[in-house]
Length: 351
Image 1: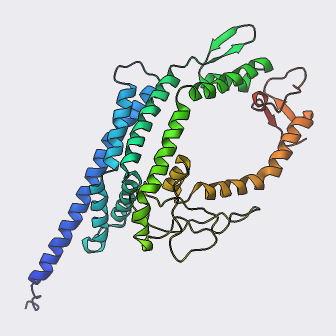
Image 2 (image 1 turned 90 degrees about the vertical axis):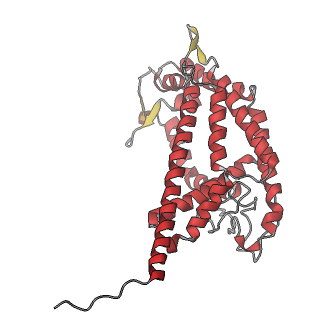
């Protein structure tokens, strides 16, 4: 005899399951479309980046194409509609029964799109100007005649890799110093070919972002704080810990600049300030805290290793029997600690 039949699923239940399935499929479709399109745009940019950086001779590589592909990729990442869709799908994650991996991917989308969206028209124009300046500087650097004036040979053209390798292995100190000076010439070259103007443009963009978002941030006091930290340590100790928060949109995905030297967590948002520079903006974007907090971490590292570094350099300079040259000159150079000599020596672990 057959057992009792189960009651058929009610119509509302079936509709609920169908709705949940539809949302799940929509989320997966969105994730796949974004990933596929971004892969295409990013690949095009990377091909132009490395093609121009390596000065490949093919006609397909050019500064104009590098600029175009970068702007196209950044426009894709700065699409507010994609940010809104990511947040909409995250809000439906439980109902749609999205997997942990899908939720994590959507959170990455939310963070990424938020980092690229800029509400300030001035900042967007400055970003475009900076992109063009980057391409021009890269093109000039690729065409730079790099090398060193070698003893007894005159000027010898070498790449930056060739110059560094010669500094490591050449037994002639004069040759090593010439290669070091050749590498240093890159700095003088780029500062004479637009790098200073590029830095100014980037800094202006960062300051424009801080101004553009001030009113919107003040209107939403519950969005959190960029970084309520304790004061930076004056001696080696725990690193500052970033406070969890969801960065708002409009300033590259992070909150306007706020000093990391504030003590404790304030009961309301601190007075708003501009990003002081592009570097502070980028650190906020990548890490969630400003450059002062980063410098505090680096200061802790430097202080904690300063003694070890001083001891190692003193040992290298003052105890010749501990020095093992890769090549054996008749007598150690008196300039062992000069930058063009340090790479040639290693210290034995025993006397």
